[in-house]
Length: 77
Image (cartoon, helix red, strand yellow):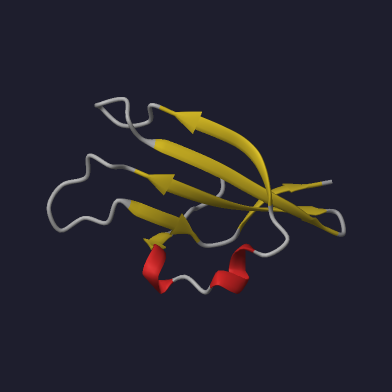
């Protein structure tokens, strides 16, 4: 599996997400069952690039409830 580095959404340049489409939506990803992850992807030549967006409303104090991963390679065809 590709390495994913998550960052606080406030640090992410909105241009990063342009051109991506939702590939999958996962709900209930945290212990409370209230979290959600959106898997975004786009095709560049023969490479599928991914970005994951995670929302955890039950995060601990000092944690960020909304995180966005850096781009990573999902698949090369």
